[in-house]
Image (cartoon, rainbow, N blue to C red; front, top):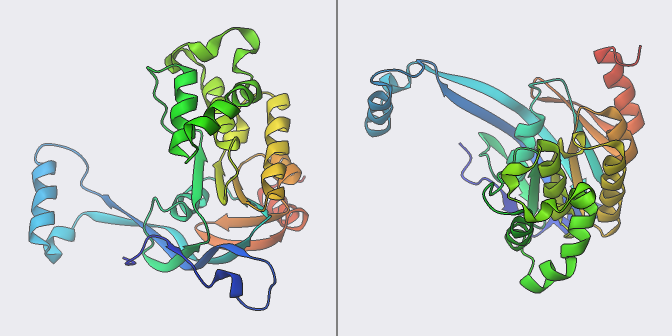
Length: 274
């Protein structure tokens, strides 16, 4: 296993002769999951403890490895919006989590210039707290001061559309639909300018009006010199939002290039363009 999950590259601004500033560099990245193939059952916890304590070859029997990402390399720059596409199980979300520093690399390195922020539709929310309380906690968790949260609070609520059919922002989050919760999550994250914003399927929720607002906000984030990564199965959102696409298939980087060119090849591959 690599000895570092994620590193900040102090030399990033001097990389090669490209005048742009790199924000994320993936250098030959492999990500491997290890799954206990024996399954759960009586004695499985004891067996797991024995493996940890003994550290013998025998202890590795029954452990299955899944090579989720294979030798992926790319460089992302400030001001880019990059789409990650691929069929189910291709490694898109896994790679995103590794860039965020949430998964270790088996081989290779990931370097970042600035702090990556991951936004996913399955991100945890405090279900027993009200929407307004979650706005405050979410803003603080992203590094905003209490004053900044207060200043941006009305804009966050308005952007989310939570209160369009009632005063839902004052209700516990457990009363929200999954779409409402996802819209509020995106609105909180989008209220702050990010060095690197990683979005996993967040634009798949909500009506077309909210999706258009979200896409416009992503373009604004790019304009403030941030970098946006978007994982989506919606090719239209990718076209409307991203200027570059990474196509992953079976964990390998199959194509990296301008959005129109990569999507054309991907749609041929999936038959979506027929």
